[in-house]
Amino acid sequence: MTGPLLASLIALAAHSGEVDAPAVRAPAPDRTTQPAAGPERDVAQPPIRQFSFRGIKGYLVERPGLPLVQLELSWNVGGAGDAAGKEGMTSLCVDWLGEGSKRLDKNALENAKADLGARLGIGAGTEAASLSLAVVTTRLEPALALAAELLTEPGLRPADLERLRSQAKAAVVQARGNADGAAGRAWAAAFWGRSHPYGHVAEERTLDAVTAADCAGVHRQLAPEGAELLVVGDVTVEQLVPLLEKAFATWRGKAPARSRVGPPRGLKGAVFFVDIPGAEQSKVIVGHGGPSRDARDYAATTVMTQVFGQGLSSRLVQNLREKNGYTYGASASFGYRRSGSAFTAQSSIRTDATGKALREIHGELLGMTTTPPTDDELRRERDGGLRAFPARFATNAAVLRSVGELLSYRLPLDTWQRWPAELRAVDGAAAAKAVKDRLQPTQKVVVAGDRTKVLPELEALAKEGVFGKDGLVILDADGRPAK
Image (cartoon, rainbow, N blue to C red; front, side, top):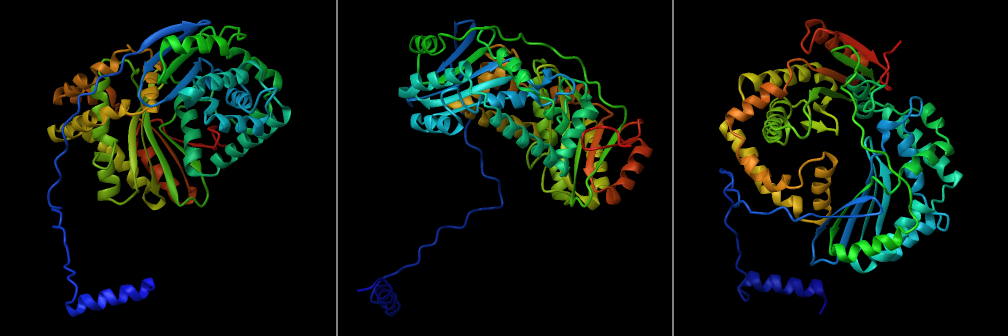
């Protein structure tokens, strides 16, 4: 009997009363009250063992159970150190290193990684370069050998460099052509300054200026002495160090020491505008300088910032999205660097609401000073942070990020052990003090959008001095004052 015919007979029988087919309905959920949150879980920061080999400072978090190992090898080599006129050099050169070894070209390298079931990559950011590896424990030895091969016997094929250069230049063109990318480039120049290590803006001409000899200099800096290695997973120090010594037996050299940079050297101006003709939305960034990551009031500053602009319940999102419908979402945070930080509140705003949204952002910032976080807001963010805390140690990757944050900012290794107590201690007085100390009365504003539709509103904001008295500056998408 075919399926459709059988189904028809059963339905007919049920209809005639020959087969019982009672309808089962679950009780309707009560949507009038918010469900109670579950209990907090006590989770201890896992122990961190320290070791060394070949001048590398090593840190290991043992996580037996799952036969996986994840690691990150890092150096104090980043885009902040790019020479003037060669912005983008470090990122381009480190990417080139990841294209293969003398023995393995790009395709062969990918096949070798697949054979091992390993994820292996290398790249550079503003302050550091890093090599990452994730693999099952039983394949750790050959995976380490492959990573060492990349570092000690790089392929450095000219064709790979030119392909990566073309891709980087295409990314520059793409960033200039959309509001999000253009605003980010303009913010780097307006807040930090183009000559500041954190304000570098890559262009086609700066990428074209990078030579193979430049990259050889970058690669020499990726040396063992002075590097840091963080390992998380199913391995012990006693098992790991011999494998590392074997894989990197021929590796020599000294990596750069960590350097500090000075304060922002941004452009004079209060409101900065980048024209994106035809843009349907405007990208807005409002911000100012902030504290160092090791500031004593970090917990209070974090909670205060979450009340202001993190998540759907935050004041900023409730205003811009729920009350006014200017945007789908918005956020505010302190972006920490090894030297200082920047507070930014940002969103993609309906073009016709750009000026109104900026006034609302300014009003919410003022509102934090006149109406500091309430007990209910503080309880919501504290409880949310405490209940989310176990996720910091839920996976190898999460542990790697959490411990890596401590190493990057030179924080005590027991920082996360103390975090729940510090979070619980944030009360109304601490939050109000964080508002007073960390939210500044004047900000820099960057807007990228359609000139014909938003510039008059921005001119009015600048004339009124809403965000400060330094006026309006029109920039190009590379962060230079427009001619």
